[in-house]
Image 1: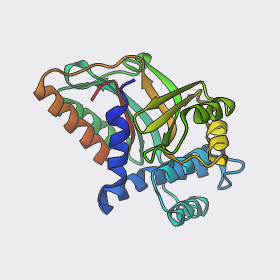
Image 2 (image 1 turned 60 degrees about the vertical axis):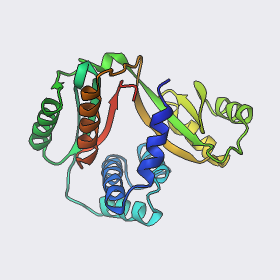
Image 3 (image 1 turned 90 degrees about the vertical axis):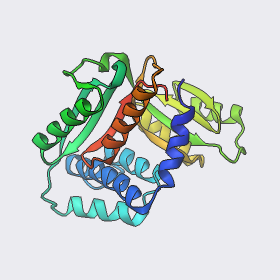
Length: 241
């Protein structure tokens, strides 16, 4: 699994500047807003909101921020976000999936086309790359301190309904089906585990490397540009960084 740099990158994102963390908070806030409008403000009866809150906590979003977003969304916030997914190819044919939430679909679609073209890729049609990804729940348990026993964590994860378990440097990666994700996450939370990341992801079936330095630079720039767009919620790709 090409995870080593990915988990390092998660830690780096948590240490970014206030402005950069603010962007992460904004993205997760949109996800919670949509969840509240679809299923109500009570996480006990709204599984989608429970998962969004767990994602927010894994990203170190303060509880006060979470509470304000839920109160605003349940109080008649008139903003409506549309969920869209874009698929395409980065430099040298890297498969890329971009999930967005936007209040202006035309603006977002234009941005997607522009950035794919600018950095040596191209925007494709629906389904052009998603066939090579599997949708999975992914829980990344932090073990940077090294005080967790691998066998214990594995048994706890399997008892909680995990489909797969993998140690990877200073983390443990737990995979679930999308349907089982919420229950497994809750069971592990109840046992006191702390997550670096907790969400349903598009996981590549295979990864590819970029041998040319120019292609690697373009791919890095493409990912940074997507990350900086407020409309972009998630970017999945099969580049082995």
